[in-house]
Image (cartoon, rainbow, N blue to C red; front, side, top):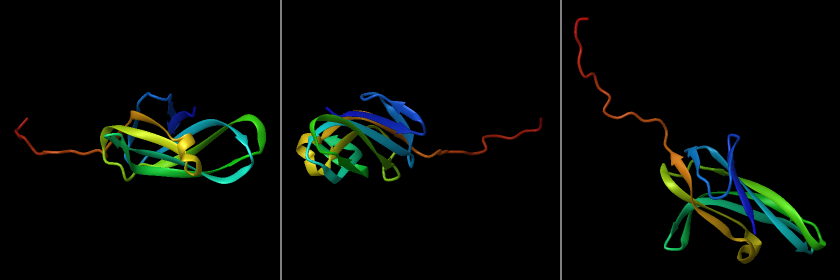
Length: 135
């Protein structure tokens, strides 16, 4: 099973816990896995933030990283990460995440729902002078 950790600006949360970010932050998604088999180079780790709607993941932002694994007869642990630019994501709560190795999606696709909250930029509304008087 793939273990995932999210990290942005030095703040890490364990899988299943919420991560609050500002739109435009970079989220670093970590994965861990065990591998045995022939050496493979140039595998593509794809980590995504989006929304799962009726069981289908709608990817909004993603990051890629290249992974190489060595030949091994026994399972060997690996870790990797990809950085995700969150600029395309609208401020909202309960975004979902997914990670996979694209070339082996059936064996590696994992996700966690409702773990990213995106705050917008600072905004003010209805700012007005409400009165003035001699003090």
